[in-house]
Image 1 (cartoon, helix red, strand yellow):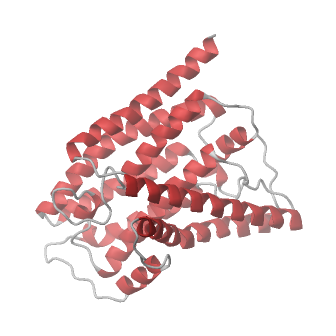
Image 2 (cartoon, helix red, strand yellow):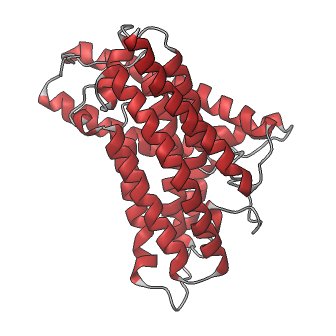
Image 3 (cartoon, one colour):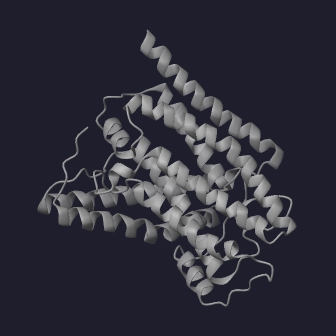
Length: 326
């Protein structure tokens, strides 16, 4: 569907606002999830702005690097941060039809996240510690199952909306033409499972543990400190926000601004920003409730859960073909 584009200056401003929004909102979203979990566990918990303080504290420390670390170990944190920030900036947040919305393709975003994951696994193996090897092998095992499920979800959404561009999918589903489809419900459940695996959340992984028998993501970054660790932590916050934004843009696109001119565009963007903030609050609350109510599963049971996501994605695609053939 065609989207009315604002003026060139407004386009630059809106695109820059989206890039800064995801950068500023990522730590806040993580802090909100932690706060919800703390309150549900009858703890006071840290402030929702604590991730900002942690980031500033890590930047102020001196980096300790192993003597046998290569240039890859030092460079990877910045590359992962850049790749994740670019991917998060391509996802429509408060508005669609921005200057670079045409690059917000599901396949491109999946590829950017896959590249970041590959670099993190290489960094985990670089020094040669046992923890890094364990984390890298587990991460690749999870990725080998999560990425096929993600591709099946992409196929399902592309068949429904006729495109893999996020803004096109959001506009199509917001128009109501697609209606209520079982395939969309199956794709949503599969996407949530994949998102939990991609971010290392319960029940796949515990982001707050350092126990060697359960670590996945934390095992690969165990040797990092100071500014390098700060970049990796910020990238993980951006990735969590990215997946929440993708779910909001694809399955709950209501409230998203579609552009305009002058005062109309600004008012639409403001309303879209409030709608996006409300979606993040709901998503963070639901994630906190889910992680409090469920226990972490054994590593060797993770393929079963990701296999369910793959089968749900495949079933969603098959249902689309069957319904069109009737």
